[in-house]
Length: 553
Image (tube, rainbow, N blue to C red; front, side, top):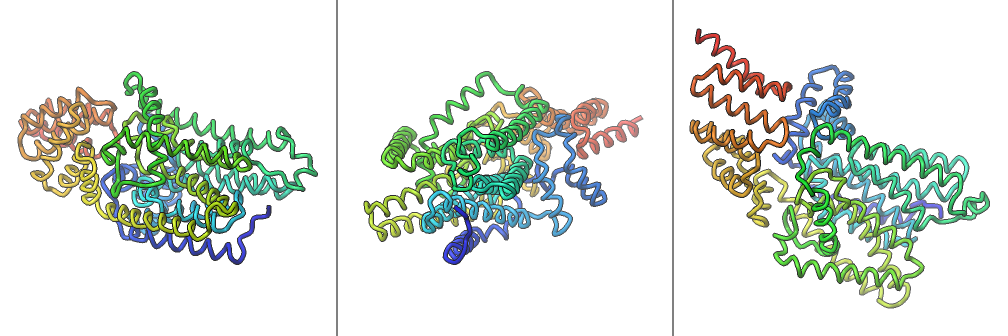
């Protein structure tokens, strides 16, 4: 099937893109939040150092994987960093610019969902619904309104584009096939360089070939209709090698950074078990988002895990029934189901966590479900089981609910304070929200206002080194040195990596300096600087201690 988008298709696609862009347009006025954005952007020392170099030297500094292999960072996402660097060089490193780029890639992903749905269904209304379902689904808010998720927006945009070009390539032969295949491989490579989830693109290609690869007159003449043939095996080898290399690379970087060594026993098993149990909830939440705010887990939002679990089981059972009824489309539905669930593989996040319901994990599943519902609706309509008017009204109502939910979710990202206040409204027991609000107020110099948030975070997460360090900073700023020292000692005892340990040593050094024990302070600052030699703050404290010690003689 030659996939052009003339006339009616082009108008439908344009209308979808305009509606999605309008729904997300408020993010273009939003700045950064204090949730990971400082680490990746405006407090990223490598990025700031690159800005002080010549343009070419700065670019080479940004893409240099050396710090990742030295264990100084836990990821190497070069295209995200290159994008931030180029934006910083041109329009300035602002949250608004990052969000604009995220929205651009979200629109690219939406267009790819439309084109993939057209290829699977040949129905413009079904493709339009699929693209709208994905484009305005609340799962997209985190990916477009949170600057730290630029990597996901880019990775999925390149990944879906790669899948579409591969679907186009397999319907051709000769030069057209080679051109589309090489373009698909190039985009898959860009996806791997944008996000760790790029490793899934090779699996998507294999899945498409196994489940629904079409056979055209041209490919039959060329003898390509056999399941195992030369060009298919060559494509699998190329995509498989790319995905395995990217996965090995990401695992190696995390191993060097010591991520796996800090995991408690049974982390993989526990994370996998939580994810498997949560799959029905993912399906339920995709079909009917129940939250008006960012969430870390669906349980505090729903408040009835068992009921949600069994509702999810019924939803999946209904989906299996549809697959059994729709025999001719079983390959397409199997492809979509595995396309969506592949994104939920827990080990790809590569961090032990109870965070299994973050919105960004529903991003690709939303695309798969949107296409699946569109195909199902088209089939129900063509079979005469449900009238076209009823389908249009029900789908229109669902999309209207999505727009309202998405627009409301977008507004929670207008500032760090609005974001964490919204999270606490949903999950008051989430220590991270208390800590982030404390960090926000502390950074604004409102130490008294920050202190109760840090104390509550420490109560909820007593073994968290980051929280203890922050609470120690607040006590130190209030000149409560004894309390600050106790918190820094707790932080030193519970530190999980060099950065947390360095912060603890630096805090203890500040306490010693406040007591004018400059020799002890110097030793502690040296330990902090040795662990994190690139930290300007630690180096500055070390210089202060040296100067104070010299003056005391």
